[in-house]
Length: 83
Image (cartoon, rainbow, N blue to C red):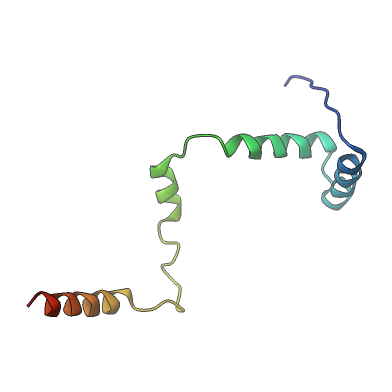
C-alpha cells in the first residue's frame, strides 16, 4: 500500500467521522472502499461473469407471471395475424 494525502471539506470530514462511528471501520478503510467502488464503475464489464452471477436469480420467486404461458399467448396472437 502507498500512503496518499487528501484534503476533505469540513462537511466531508464530519460525515466520514459519523460513518466511522456507525460502522466501526477506520477512515482509511472507508476511503479505500469508496475509491475501490469508484474505480469499479469504470472497469469494463465482464458480461459472462455477470450472467453467471445472475443465474437462478428469479428461480424460486412465486410472484412472477407464468412466462411460458405469456409466450404461448403472444405466439398465438402473432400467428393469427400472419394468416
